[in-house]
Image (cartoon, rainbow, N blue to C red; front, side, top):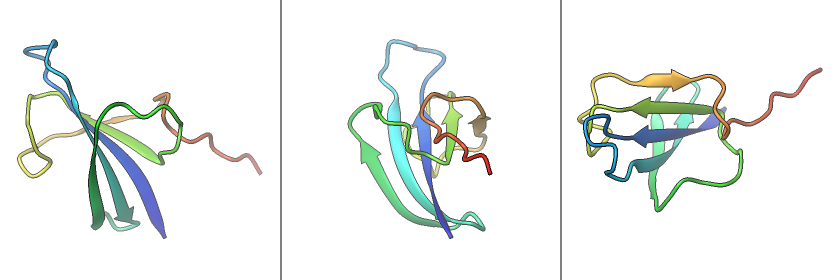
Length: 81
């Protein structure tokens, strides 16, 4: 099973710098299958998880800590059964 993850790399020290948006396709164990850099923030809620690093890093490889957003506007609505 694969899932789509939105990763936001922002900078809390200089908030005027534009954030970097990465779309990841991952396996259920966390292995990254695809990594795609997005031009700007997506408009549709199409992601299973949203993670953010606000330390001013420029790539996913240099990040040491990530914060998960549980009620982000781009999360897919959960189906109620």
